[in-house]
Image (cartoon, rainbow, N blue to C red; front, side, top):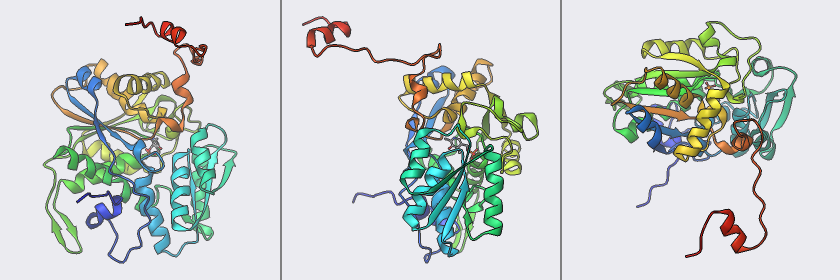
Length: 367
Ligand SMILES: *Cc1c(COP(=O)(O)O)cnc(C)c1O
C-alpha cells in the first residue's frame, strides 16, 4: 500500500516530546530528498550528498522545528505566536500558525529580507512588522514579548524547535543506513547545527522512551563542519558581531542564540566552524544550480562554499561520505541566479515568432 509521509512528528513520534494525545499541527514537513551530488563527489573523491531542505512545505528546514513549536503553542493554549526572523522563520511561522488557527506576528529587520519570504508571511496572513534594527534586535524584542505579553515565542530559543529540527539527522541516517563521516551546514543563529548534532547523538546510542528503550540506529556520529558568512561570523571571531553584513540574509546574524550548543556540536564532534566570503557563497550557489541541478538561496550555499574551500586547501578527505544540508529553496531569493559574475543581470534574448530564426539562434541546423 502507498505510504504517504505524515510529517516529522508522526514519523518520529517515539523520539519527540509528544504523546498519543498531542494534537499535531503539520503541513507534511520532512521526508526531503538526499540527492547525490555528482560533481562535488567527483571534485572531492568522497561521496557527497545534499539534504535538500528547500523541499519542505514553506521552502526551508524551519518547518521541521515549526511543526513542533506550533504543536506546543496549541498545547499551551496560546492564541497568538511571535517570532523574529531573517525571513524563513516568518514564512514558516505564518503558514503553521494558519494551520493551527493562531494569530501570528513576525518581526523582521529593516531591509535585506527577500521578496519570496516576505510574500509568504503576508500571504499566510501574519502581522509583519519591520523593525528599525537587525535580526538580533528583533529577537531581543520577540523574547521580551514572549515573557511579558500573551504571545508564544516560536524562535529556535524555544527547545521544541530544536527537537523538530533534529529529525533532519534521523532522515540522513535512515537514507544512508548509517551516519555520514562529515556533516556540513550553514550556521546563522546556530539552531540547526545544534539540532543535527543532537539528532546524530540520539541515533547513535540506545534511546529511552516512555514505552521502553530503542536500540541505536547508527554506529557512529559525524564530524560537524559549520560555515558562516565572513561578514557575520561570530563563532570565528569568538564573540558576537554588532553589525553583521552579508548578502546571505538567512545567516546574517551577529549574536547566535544557540551559542553554547553549537560550540558543543563543533567540539564534541571534532569539527569546526569557519567562514566563507560572499563571493565564495555566490560561486557555490552557481555550482549547485549549474552543476548539480539543485537551486538554493544564497545562505543555503554556505556549506557547499565551505566544502569547496576546504577541498582547495587540501583538507577534505577522499573515500568518505559527506552530507551537506542545503537549507532553503532558490525561489525564495531568485534574483541572485540572474546576476552574472560582473554584477549585471542576465537578459533573455528576444526573437521573432519564427522557427527558422529560433533554430538559428540555438545554433541548430535542419536535419
Ligand atoms: C535559518 C536559516 C539558516 C541558518 O540556520 P540556523 O539554525 O539559524 O543556524 C540557514 N539557511 C537558511 C535558508 C535558513 O532559513
